[in-house]
Structures are given as structure tokens and as C-alpha cells.
Amino acid sequence: MNRAERRRQKKAARGERGTSPDAALLDAVRKIQAGKLKRAESLLSRVVKTYPEHPDALHYLGVTLYQLGQYDDAIAQLSAAVSVAPDYAEAHNSLGIVLLEKRNLDDAIAHITRALEIRPDYAGAHSNLGNTYQEQSELGRAVDCYRSALSFDPGHREAAYRLASAYLQSNEPEDALAACATCLAIDPHCQHALAYKAIALQLLDRADEARELYDYDRMINLVDLEVPSRYKGLNQFNDALAKVIREHPTLVWEPYNRVTTGGAVTGDMLLYPSQAIKTFERALRRAIDDYCESVVEIPGHPLLGRVPKKYSLTLIASILVAGGHHPAHIHESAWLSGVYYVKVPDIVSGDYSKHAGWLEFGRPDYPVTSRFELDTTARQPRAGLALFFPSYYFHGTIAFAGNEERIGIAFDVYPGD
Image (cartoon, rainbow, N blue to C red; front, side, top):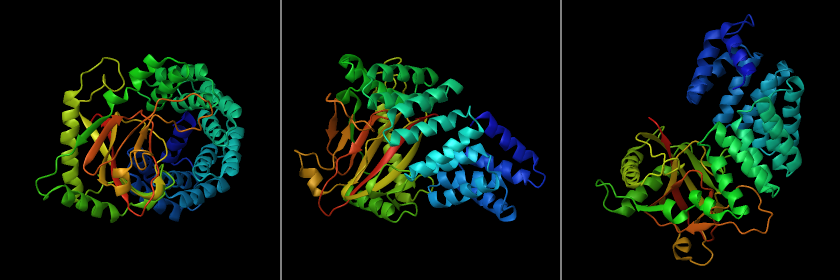
């Protein structure tokens, strides 16, 4: 959050607009920051109903709806905010972000550019404009935007790692490595910077250094999860999990805010856990605890030197159908990630040549244009298997054919309570 946005929040809280419902807005902002999005939405909806032209309330409601994955509703509220307050830079920038997510790139550029006309030193808007240009493969313009963002805010982490990705996409690994160093100076645990650093080192033929980060055999762990005693075997346990996933109220087909094609994804199932999910969580935590105890620590290593004593979890389930896959991505902010396989199609279990339905590691999230062959690997799913891997590993699923579903529960381990 930039200084101007904080001033706007304080202004809303103090009621400096005269009719501003200060207490409700302040409470909503606090709930947004705490991740209590449904409560924030309820509060802000009531404010907007009473004050339909209040730009701050419209803006915060739009941001909340965006974070809840309700993109069209978010666009409606943010459009209303810039309509009643045309010089509201933060609202133009937020609207541009949502339009970018929906791949409405021309309108995204228009609104983010407008934010910069109002506030030329708006680092976040410079970075978001770079994202839009990078989406259009206008890499030179993207690089300029990210560099501008860093000139106004040297601590802008996203601009630094996105600069690294733009340089990699342009086949400039030396510059990419320098951008990674900048990002890791800002945040030593930035998972994107670690991922791009490993790729830059490979492109520079520094394989030994890259292997310190991308040692697949050492850092990808396969664990057969212990079946809880309340279930009569693995099939009954997985059937119970599959039922909960299929019936989960947050299950959405190809949600905009998830990297999924040809499949459906839930929200965090631990927010409203069923008995089966609670049982699964206990079994998974035992396996994670065993893994943590087994790690031979290496000081300074982003995975092996950072084993948490306490951690929190998220559980995101997905159902893929034939042709479906999760494109390459990483899990920012987490330390350890993984997936538990609930249901695996027969073609995935039997395919050893094309790796259909397997989980692939090491392929980045941008089009690879160089002829250099990156070091990748893949692991075969199996019902009852949990895969553990560093959160900075790029990973994605390989598409599969047939008429069966592939069901998994992805999990992330976050250091701290």
C-alpha cells in the first residue's frame, strides 16, 4: 500500500468528506487487511447502499470483490468509483488490475495510464503497466515500466522479480540475474526471484549453482499419506475427500484468479472444513512434521535452511478433466508446497512415455524462446501419494486424454503461526 492510499484510508476513517461513514469504512479496511473478505464485503455493501457515490467505499468494495474472485462485480464497483471521482488514481489502477486479469488489455492500459497521468510517481501503477505490456510480449516497454517502478520505489518487490522475468523472456540472463539479486535484497525469501535465479543460472551455464536451488532428486519428496483409522482403507478415504471436493461451495470452473485450464478449483478448504478435511489435515500435518524433522539443514538455503518450527496451511482442491492442466506457476510467500492425489485416471497411472497427467517441474511461466534446454523433470501421480517440493519450484501438470477426472488437493506451508 502506498502513502497516498494510506492517506486516503485515514481520510475516509476521519470522515473528511463530510458525509463519510468513517467507522464502517475503517472497520472494512481492517477486515480487508486481515483477510476477512466476506465480512468486509458485507460492511462495504451496506455503506455503498447508503452512500452510492462514495468513491472510497466503491473502491474498497471493488478491491474486496476482486480478491473474492468476483471479477465482473469488481469491475462494476471500480468503474463507478472512477466515474464519480475521475482523478482517483488508486481506483484507476485497481480497475486496470482486474481488467488485466480478464485479459482486457487495451482497457487495462488505458486505466493504468490514467492513474500515472494523475500520479506520475505511482510505483505500483508503473509495475502493473509493465505486467500488461509483458502480457502483450512488448518486453522493452515492460522493462522500462518495471525500472520506472523501482526508481520511484526501490523496495518494490514485484517490479524487481517481474523485471527479471522480462529479461529472461528477452534472453538476457545476466540482466535477469542482477534483477533477481535486487529482489532478494528486498526480500530474501521471494519465491519468484529464487525461481528466476535458478533459470538465469542455467542459461549462463552455471549448472552447479543452479543445482543448489533445483536439486530435484533431493528436494522433491514422495510420501504415502497414512490413511486415518476412521476409514476402511485408502479408497474409502479418498472417496470421502472426492465427495467433499465435488460438493464444495467454492468450487469454480476455470476461475480467473487460479492457474487452471480445463478444470475446477476450490477456495481454501480449511476456512470451512468438513470432517473429512479436518481428518485429512491431521494426517497431512503428521507427514509434514516428519518431513521437517528429517531435513538436514543447510544454513542460508531457501528451503533447507529455513525449516519452520510452526506453520500454517492452506488446502486448495482441483478437479481436472481430459485436456485440463495447471500451467506452470509457483507459490509466492509459502516455504513448502505440495499436492495430495485423491483420484488419478488410469491413463495417467499407465503412461510412462508422454507423461500424460504427470506433474512437471522446472518449466517457467513465460514462453521460452531460446534454444537452450532447461533442466526439467516430472513425477507420476498416484492415488494416496503426497508430493512435497520447494514453493519456488515452477510446476505444472501435463494434459491428459480420456473421460476420467484427476482430483488433487494442493497445499502450502507458511512459516509462523
